[in-house]
Length: 339
Image (cartoon, rainbow, N blue to C red; front, side):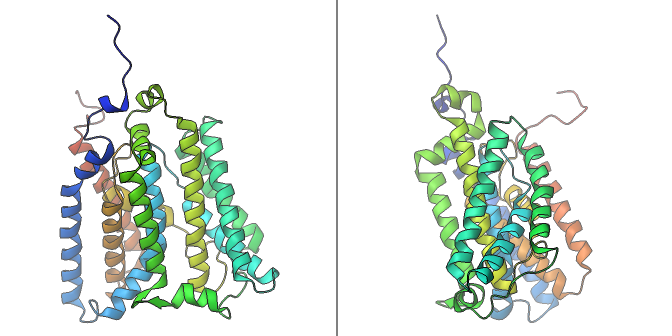
């Protein structure tokens, strides 16, 4: 008797799909506990830490990281990775400011150019990975260097343009709606849209299936190549939005300042939020909680006057801890030890 091919429905529920998202509840509770502890600790150490003004500072600072972490979550779910998002944000920032200046102070031209370049970079990454058959880590590691160099070449290695005389950029970088910064609203809209896509659509279910078992997904008729290229294009577009916000926040196009190191923060947030780096599991809610935790921790260390280098140490340590917890939960065999 011939065994029928495996389909996405045959995969364990704990690995993929909406039920896989539900299993991340314990992870989210742990993040909420850690976030509460961080807020309480730094609140006791500094009376102004829990003030409304400082909470807004934390929210604004975490927005760009949050946008990158949301799309990093998507690509990790489908079994990929993008280490080049920080450099992509730098390119988008420079393009938005330089186009704004050259187009006669047109904010729409600057934003459209940045989004167009971001989408192009995303598609290029996807094509290299899918059709060039290059490992996503290697391909985007190359992109990390290449796009950083491109941003520096375009800008001659320094900030370009000046957008703080434009009402649109001022509104994006410093405006508020219903008491919340516009930047935070943009993150909320993107996060909700991606959450709905992942949890309530066939596209989302297929992305979980690809990350959980790409062979079974292919046998089930899912066009994996098309999905992966589309995911990297989505990354490019959202990262371009983050680059535009970076320009609006700093007042000029930044080739590296403000974007360097964002890839580590985004990956750390996704891992802390419950994404399994092998793919097939994760959710936007956990990622946003992790972004909030990282933002509050970074701000608290800054307020306490702790050397910024220790913040990098903390981020690296958190990433290791998150992966160790994943390995233990999934019952992975330790390297070099018998199974």
